[in-house]
Length: 526
Image (tube, rainbow, N blue to C red):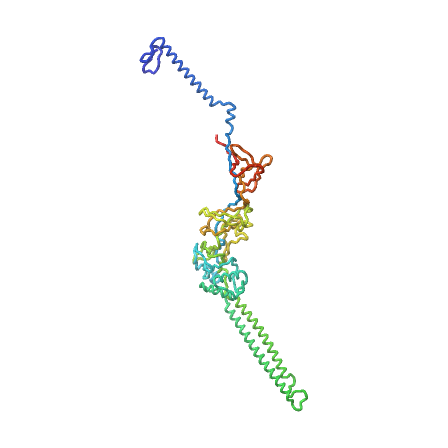
């Protein structure tokens, strides 16, 4: 065996040579054979071990396969038992706005008949405040005055008119210093007309006359009264003259009776005329004159009443187009749509008045849970402002408009429609009034309303609804998880709200605040 240098291969045809090689002879051959045998055994052992490992990765016993096919142990989900006041809430959106919003769209015109109304003055801008008695608009030279009142304008107010709207006008003018104490409340008389005239004059306008030819009518009625007064005076003079003639006739008759004429029959006055005596004629004249005076007096009374009626109906009037009644001052101008010189074809400006309220809309299911008097929390996500409030009205039918019985709503502008913010056509409108005045900066904002629809009488034990289950025998239980173990506690459920429920453990059941109850399980990951 020989070794060929540089070949990298061992040769067995000669003895090994070189440093460290075993000495030649029989002993060296044995050592070489043993080394080769050891190498072969090692290689075989490694091959067998690899094959076993590969088999172990592929081949499983039935028990091992079944064990590995099962899901891993689940994770238990728990929640703590709480002791608190349980509330059931309804959450909805609402819009902050004034209690009254009016779209001003005057239908009247101060110009000639048939002329189109044109804006001639627009003294306010969006965001301005409006004071009582202020003119907010002028159309064709005629003003629109804002006055205090809750009753919408629905007619022209003329002399002789009666009603609550007349009383409202009287009160509004009185607050501004133009009283009408000479007229009964609710009757438009001469004193009310004088107050209207003074109010208009103080603002640089003349009130409109109730009748275009009112002056002529008054003059004619006064002339008739004058004629009646003269007729009565003439009648009285005629009566006085007739009475004097009667007195003279009676005196002459008495004189004749005292000195009888010789040769005349006894008992017959001397010089008595044939037929009607002077006394009888004088008496007839007096009766006739007296009747004329009576009739003249009656005629004069009628003429005076007619004149009073004419004066009462031809004084200054207040057209509906010149009035804007608002529930509170100062009011606010929310928007201006018109311009000076523009034709009035619709809303010219929008004005709001009264304290800020929130108007929202309830769905049909929520409507059954909300009623007036319930407490509300208002939250502005924009500013973080919170406030407490009370539900004041809930509509009985879906649609727009203020709910019936609400203390706030929309006013009506002459000839214009009313706008109701914060509602939709499909929901049930509701009005929420804050317990304290809201920050004016919230006006127009969309806010969240949380209505406390129900509340427990005091603190109770509360668990999530998912913690309550029913057993096969019909018992209601919660499962307490403690120390890795589980125990069931039979309970009686109570009020439900906000995904939680009140529970009362039955006698012998141990359940208290802080206990962990199982609400579900969550499969672990393999």
